[in-house]
Length: 341
Image (cartoon, rainbow, N blue to C red):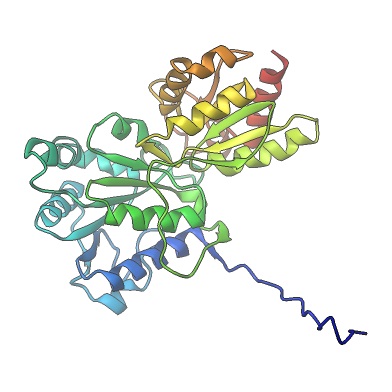
């Protein structure tokens, strides 16, 4: 019984709202379009069809074809349109149907969007976003399964975002739309159906801020995009062997949160950098270099290792495709070997 001096305290169960990665992106687009009339979408089949992966969904029914614009199959036109709109005060969000096709828009993005603000002394801004489904795992073969993020992270003036969770897919996208610079958002195709906790309200996540997803002390697993959930799964398996892995989600390749990465390397003394892109020229090399050039180098107990995609175009065959990209078991094996060095 409850005494007169101690009132009854009811236990309230808070239910976390979970939505998919794709739904989180669509919600972010919808909320930002409602908030800011300058925001509009442009891309191939993003209107009535709802996008190749269904991300834009029914947005055309709410905002109409003026703000959800279907385009011809011409990526260079999509990028050029977005740049022109951005420098005149709009907030375009362009979608490339597959990230591979952005190769057709390299001139506009690398030579124009990335440099215009600098070359004009900051008198204009280029507030545009390019959303791109990337990565392997859907059996889409070599021309539809690449990981090209390192190309763009090499270019000053571009920002590169690689969200790994539904929460970040929404929060980083909204931050990207509000940024005054061109931002490329690579969305892994296998993450679109993954569910996670996402607040219903408008919110942003800081561009250029990495997160420690799991604390540990034996080694650091540094990853981004699809490799983050795989690293977390691997960390749980390693914990069963008594190996406590720290998992760092890079989130943004440019700007890069060097401080968080270096702090983790210094803390654990062992580092495994993981990404899906091929090892040669991959962004993992940049992360390794930043650690090697930092004060963390003197705290390392073993050489920094990389785990990356094989040096081959992505095969169509599902079994071969899987073998070309790091899987959970590969991360476990590489981490186990590193701890034993």
